[in-house]
Amino acid sequence: MLEEYTKYIDEGTLSELKQLAQELKGVKILHVNSTKLGGGVAEILHRMVPLMNELGIETRWEVIKGELEFFKVTKKIHNLLHMPGKEALTHQDVITYMRQTYENVSYIDTDPYDVVFIHDPQPLGLIVKKRKGQRWVWRCHIDISTPDEGVWKFLEMFVNGYDGSIFHIPEFVREGVQIPAFVIPPSIDPLHDKNIELSEEFINSVLERFGIDPEKPIILQVSRFDRLKDPLGVMEAYKLVKRRYDCQLVLAGSFAADDPEGEEVYKEVMEAKGDDKDVFILNLPPDSHKEINALQRAATVVVQKSIREGFGLVVSEAMWKYKPVVGSNIGGIKRQIVNGVTGYLVNSVEGTAFRIKQLLANVKDREEMGKNAHERVRHSFLITRHISDYLLVTCKLLK
Ligand code: UDP
Image (cartoon, rainbow, N blue to C red; front, side):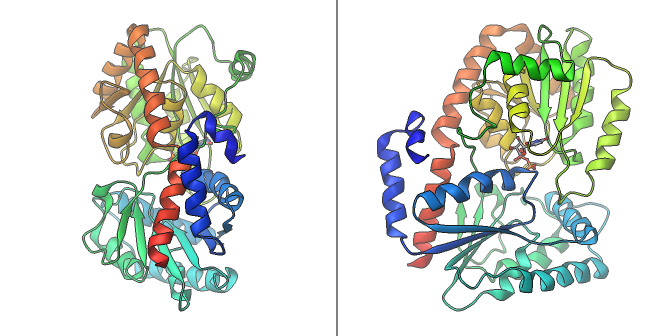
């Protein structure tokens, strides 16, 4: 499988990757996160773990167990880390988090590994299991540049027990982090079903299945049903565009196992849709990779109007498919989209509508930006670069 990447990266980069892996021969690595399905972290691990094994590094992936109550608390932590809110973490929340952590301590065997990567805050507390000689890394996938201080203080106690931390962009590195911090943006895999090339026939069959008109422009946002992805804001922008252009809006999403708010947000979006026949709210099974791929390829303009975003994998996925993306000027998206070159960065509903209209009006701009977008992802955001960065961090920490 590794050799297949030479279609996208040069031989030299691949042999560097193999050399790095050679340095780490015999090292055992474990990744731990909170869901097998749904969301960007699971998406990356599904591809990264087999590739690391193919490189000769024994790598496993474990998922923590959690009751609904626990995931309600971790979702609250997730939201509060993204921005301070009205709610605060209660004593009961802390007890729920600690109790589940305690259960996972005996459920997940971390001892056989030399290096343990813990993804995001849900499994963070497992650090209490760290044994002598091991290296533990906290891989943060979220935008924690403006967190609720109380929640951050609680997590910081765990974070500082790690040997290293990894953030998507420099702005996310917190001052209180006393351990080495590395900056590594995440990636997409061109060989994943989500990103492989598809025939026109298949793309059209997907549109037909959902009743989408292939002749009418399609504005698309793909996201879990989460308020931080601002699906209602996308709908408002679409309504402004619709005054001038006969177009369709597709909001494709799914529920993630570790996100208890999905159903509620889905209902809100369905209500906002009303009886507009040009709006399609698709609640897809989480493994609908080829369908998402087809929708991204069929889209005229892709939108990512998140309020907070560590790094939108969906942004990179759409860019890889030669799509200009209109994305919020926040978090990792700021680093993904080069404003005016690969798409547009926007700050409001009106701005989003304005840029969508501009792109709908101009095929040439769309094509040019789409090409630039593809090249940007090929250069900076593919999985081979991501693995190589992880291996470098591992080498550094084991020295
Ligand atoms: N995704 C999917 N189906 C959906 C919604 C999202 O397969 O209905 C995928 C999407 O293609 C991307 C990942 O889930 O690969 C979402 O990652 P992103 O970083 O954009 O957001 P997150 O969900 O991690 O906040």
